[in-house]
Image (cartoon, rainbow, N blue to C red; front, side, top):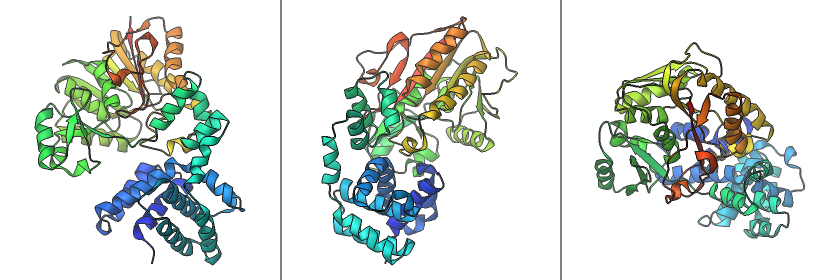
Length: 445
């Protein structure tokens, strides 16, 4: 009999691999479909296998190549992902006996392959040991070693080495393997942090104050969306580094603000909160269904000043010098949030940097023209690559002499900002508390 949890995990991995689906979206869809069949522990195991197998893909594939006489291209996507799942459980999970991982994988191979496939999976997995991973720490080539021991593609390591030492890059790659903590932003339009903390305490959920004033860090990765405090709009899920971008813009009551890349609305709603729900925020996105997400978030939080509009920020609009302040959280490669979306590592290549830069530069140039004289603009990404961040800013300033960087005032003693760079901008690399992020503030002189 096939284990339902592993079968669901396999279906998700197949979609990620074959259909190029995003891990978080594919996982949510399958969990919704099978919600009535699953217990809390089943959901935990499915999530663990999906995210773990996706995270360690390059390392796991190296182990497969070590033992398989068949080339990976010859294997069906079903059998390949059954092998990956099995190896992840044997090598990286301590609570699952090897015999269980092997037997369940063989059962899946019988269902999604044939007799020979099952024998092949059985033969490979019985050879796998934890030492197959441990041996990778003895690799002499430093880039290859970091790549396999942290499951990071070489192109990303090489990009990071343009600005960081080998030891620093290794630390960043290791941090991207950590399970992210869950932080929630308190909706101060309706309540305060202490009241929400006490409500969580009643539910036996521990929460501690975040680094930023309006945030709590929740110790259990529970479905916050199911709680009344979420449904009633008392809080919303947001990483603190993302919230920092809105704080840095520092919007004031009655100002006209543009959030040019707004969906799903986390930063947009924080801007409204900081404005005490007074003024105007235009929230743009190129997809109608995504602007609806912004509207949905605003309704839940009780915000009336957000005007969601279907607009493409990379195309010139007729909004010259219309806004007091602008937030540009531009599309990026997402290298600062790999621990939340591990498939990012395998969906992108070095050539994607050039393509995404074109879009980022267009958005920055276009939106700079919508800013009033004396107005301020925050450029941010959840990427940690120099090409998408500092280089874009420097190239923009070179062409637009009527702009200058406004140094961001920070507390040097706060570990949250330990990766602050020169010239007054903030660059945060993934760490135990926050995602990786880049934030730079510029002013139209």
